[in-house]
Length: 550
RNA sequence: GCGCCCGUAGCUCAAUUGGAUAGAGCAUUGGACUACGAAUCCAAAGGUUGCAGGUUCGAGUCCUGCCGGGCGCGCCA
Image (cartoon, rainbow, N blue to C red; front, side, top):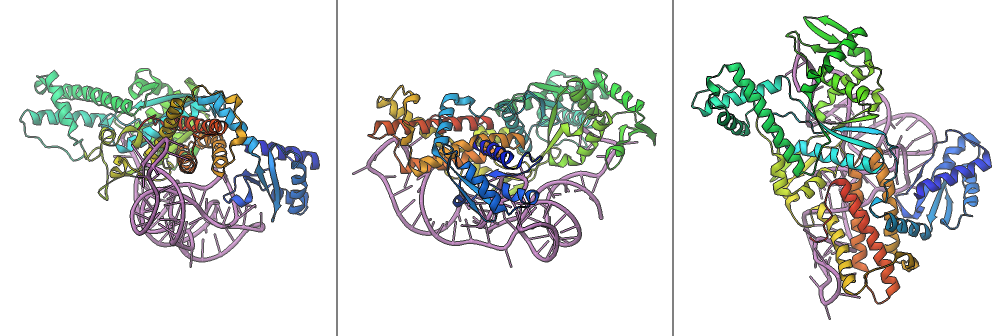
């Protein structure tokens, strides 16, 4: 990567001139404006205070030394107030092009993670109803992040935490029970905070089919049956939706299992030993304020039941202490942000570095239909289901749109736009570029250009402005991958692909690939193939297909 | 009231984590297919980065205070 190369050269040069300057923080970056070269550094400005020399003088000294490396640098300039600007020789970009052709789909997969074990927990929706649009965003994000981290050398495990316990589950069971009664002709009173969705009727029907005598059973038992069966049915539905969305998990982790395996008990015991639990108003509290939480939290309610938090403490204890993950990434809806400190406090209580837990808060999804914003609530039964969205819009477009924004910003999902198969829809813009390249190769094949040996190509034939721009853009890919991995930001890849596609379409419309000049044709085919490889890798990291024909 | 996120072109969002003249897409207007796919390309226009201070060579980005929006603030999950 050229950026890194420049950085190394700068460090080396400074060491030779002024000795080892420890902890020097400086930037090497791509200027927005091309008149400042391909890359620029502020190193002289940063050194000014330490060396007590005018920055221009420092910059000039460094520049004159680096000008000796003419294979890499075409030109180096120094400008006020002390920036050093570099123009990179196309030799360098051509070397990179060859690397892409050599490594193919492995290109860019550097070992950033050093085999560190990462657990990505995402979606983890309660099995109380079908997945909706908001879960879809989390699913696309978590899955893409997993792909990116795997690609960059992390050992990734994808996990879905099933909240198959607690109050909400009881309400689910009772909701189904009531609907079953209703279906059997009984008049019922349906409480405001119960699950009102249509799907509850479907489940009730299934329960009645399997247990015709349900309503003559003892109520407690009947509700228990409803709860069990509802959970199973809904979970299977969730699983199916996710698979259709190309999201596959390594583990489905049940909250109940934490109780069956006595993990919760074990963890509470440890906290008690550490003197971090006390009793107040008939409940047991964890002293989370000692670790930066706003208030202490209940772990055993006055009715003897645990809370969701209690399970979560055990779950995360298990993640770090027993399964020994180096990093745990939790992808949550932004409405859970108040929960972060509490969980980090629990980790600290166990002397686990809370930095190891990375909570990604994903902002809400607003559905736009006919210019109207639709809000979503599982309880009220008002939501657009993920499966509907996939059916109407398609997996590729849905994933691409979900991954086109930073997690920090709320996302407006415009169904009409997503469904349109035209220019407005960005996913096709990228896929079309890929398909176009495939089509060129199809044509080349017909013309008898079959087996091309890339070693013999005269790359110096690539001289057009658009060709050089494409070469530069291809070189940037490595940097984008690193940045996306380091900042957990798949959207950076989405953006990059759109930019690469734009440049490719521009090139395509200005220059022919298949020409009379055979050696030029070979060089251009090589450039196209490199683009195709990058499109394929990039789309794959988003979980979007790269079709050869559209 | 307190906490978190956000405020950038008419709309939806970027901006290399403090860099030089703030960029894309959509929408609008006008143009380009008798050569590899027009799901494409070219051009025009669009801005006091919510407001006010501060930090420094340099601020959309950092600090403080307001204004506006979203989300939280349970012995729910």
